[in-house]
Length: 213
Length: 213
Length: 213
Image (tube, rainbow over all chains, first blue to last red; front, side, top):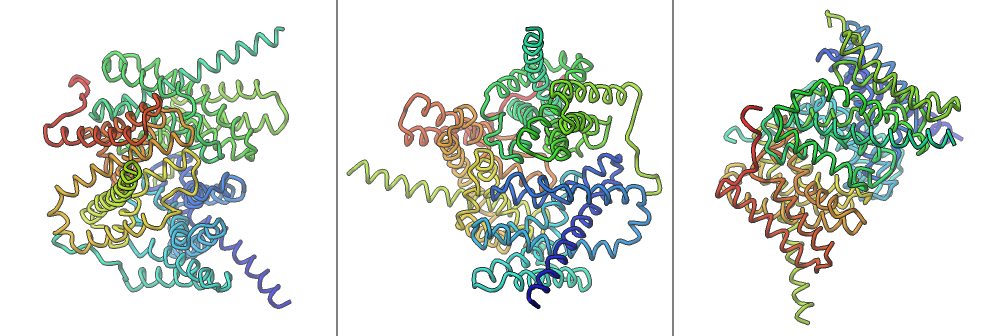
C-alpha cells in the first residue's frame, strides 16, 4: 500500500513537472519571440515549438508517430497559455526570471529522464537512449535559437546539454544494470539539477578549446 | 451528374492549384537563392526544398512515409522548371512579383487546407490537424529563410502563418461538426486568401509586443 | 572464388570508407565547433550531428526508423574519438587539412552512393533515391553550418552537392538499367571524387546568377 501510494504521488509529481516543464520551455520561447519583436502569432508559434520540439524529434527518431505532442492536446494548451501571458505581461514575466530558470531546469531534468526511458522502452541501445533523452531536453532550445537567428545557446553554455546527458546517462545506466526505474529517474533528474545549479551558481564550465586554436 | 461534373471540376482545379502552388513556392525559394548569390545548383536545391518541406514535415509527423513529395515525381519536376526559369530569367520573373504573390497566396491556402485534411484522415486531433495544415503551408518558407541565414519571415509578417492556421481551422472545425469536406476546404482557402489580401493591401497586422518589452 | 574474394575485399573497403567518412565528417564538425569557441561538449555534439545527420534524415524520410546511426553504436564512438582528438590536438588536426579534405571527399562519395542504394532498396523512385543519396552526403554539413550560424557552404561552393547528386544519379541510373550494383556504386563514387577534385584543383564551378540579378 505504501509503495502504491508513493507511486501515485510520483505519478502526480511527474505529471505536474511535465506540465511545469512544458510551461517553462514555452515561456523561454515566448521571451525570445518578444525580444526579437515577433508579433503575437510568431510568439505563440515559438512557445509551442520550444515546448515540444525535443520530444517530437525523439518520437520521430524512434518511430513513435504521431508524436505525443500531437496526440495529446494539453501540451498545446499549456504552451498557448504560457505564450499569451508572456506576451501581454512581459514585464512581470521577465521579473520572475530566476523562478523561470528553476522551472526550466526542472523541465530539462524531467524531459531528459523521461525521454531516455521512452527510448529504452522502444528498444534503443542505452547509450543512444541517453543521447535521445538529452535531445528531448535540449531540442526545443536549439530550435528556438536557430529560428531566431542565434547559435544554439544550449550547445555552448552553462553545462546545459551536459546536464541533460548526465540525467539520461543515469537512467540508461541504471536500466542496464537492472536498477528500479523510479530511483534511476529520480537520481538522473537530481544530477541534472545539481549540474545546472553548479554551472549557474559556481560558474562550472566544460573545457574550452585551447586559446591557440 | 451535375455533382459528378462539379467534383471533376474541383479535382482538376485542386490539382492545378497544387501544381501552381508548388511552382510559386519553388520560385520564392529560387528568388532568395539568386539574391543570396547561390550557384545554379544551390538555387535549384532551394527551389525544391521550399516547394516540399512543409508537406514533408507533415508527412513525417503523421507517419505517412515516404512523404508524397518523394513518392510522386511531379513536385520535383515542377520545382526544377520553376527554379531554372527563375535562375536564367531572373529579371523577368522579378517583374511579375505581384502575380507570384497571388499564386503564392493560393498555394498557401491550398497547402494549408489539404494538409489539414490529410492529417484528419490520419486520425490526428482537429486542433493539431489545423496546426499541421499551417505547417504544410509555412514549412517551406521557414526552411528557406533558415537556410539563407534569415529569421523566418513567415513567423513575423503579413499574417502569413495566421492565414494558414485560419484555413486549417476552418477545415478542422468543419470536419468536427460534420460539414462537407468540399465546402470547408473552399471556405478555409477563401479565408486564407482574404486575410493575406487584407495584410498586404490594408496593412492588417497581428499585435506586436508592448514597446516597453 | 575470385568473385567471392573481391566481394569480401569490397565489403571490407566499404566498411573502412564508411568509418573513415564518418570520422572525416565528425572532424569537420569539430573544427567548426572549435573555431566558434564552443566548449568541449558543444564540439562533441557537433561532431556527432555532422557525422550522422544526413543518414538520419534519409532514414526518417524512407521510414527506416530507428535510423542506422541510432541502432549501431560505432558511428557514435567514431564521432567521439574524432571530436576529442580535434578538440585537444586542434593544431595538429588543422595541419592535416588537405588529408582531411581527401577523406571528406571519399566520405561524401561513399555516403551518397550507399544512401542512394538504400533508398532504392526501400522502393523509392530512382530520381528521388539519387536526391536522398545527395542528402545523405550533404545533410551533415548543412546542419553543421545552420547550427553554427552560417549559410550552408555545401549549397554554394565547390560543386559539393552536385558531386553528391552525380554519384547518386549514377547509382540510380545503373539500377534502372539493370547494371550490377557493385560497379555503379564504384562508378558513382569515382565521379563524385572527380568532380570535387576538379572543383578544388581546377576551380570548376556551377554557373552563378547573371550579375544583373
